[in-house]
Length: 313
Image (spheres, rainbow, N blue to C red):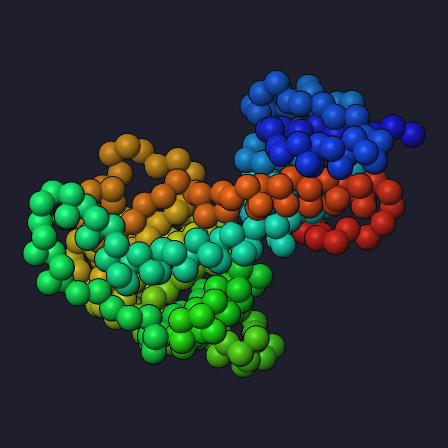
């Protein structure tokens, strides 16, 4: 029996080749709007999705639909609850980009600590005296990891073993006080108060939405930095802007913004102590290939009746 897979947005050829080699027919979506996907999913057994919103309406239209597989980790663009109620499996790719994001996170931490962007900008403007404004060493500093999952643990490993940093982590319902040599606590305030750098690595859920707000930012050291490569909605952007303008924290590196694409007039862009990038922490060729192949594997596992390697529901 031949199965058909709807691919909402283009992926690397390696992912398509994997599906073709396992006998699947591929169908590329002509658009990612709900109205289009509602029609184009009707004859499909699986969806491989990147950023398109997969709603309950789309799922109900796909009467043959058995699995939705995500290019990447975060599944906040998939109505997982609806999928579960309809008996549709959801899988993702948590192993695909963890090293790429962890490396990127360490790059942002280094750039903040060493003032790399500030030095570059000032020297280009002819300010050689900027060299009198010193950066800091990472060795001996404390890194707070909010979300001790696949990426968070890898960031901790690179920070502690590679740079001699102390690492403490926040994890809800932690079953152990130590995870891979990270001091783990359920006390978020403790992590915020005692860290020189705070790095966010939590998925976007109802519990994590806005979890870093005015109160949480006020607990951070005035010389501390915030790094967000998770999801924009995890941080209250207005509260972050206020904290930065009032020098309540030293700076931030932000790879993700509320609503995915920030407006051109976002006031955070005007601050010299802020590094901004365009949700690109996982954008390496190697990660792109893995993020294409791993959801293809998930689709094949479900449609072949095997237990998926990376189940979401």
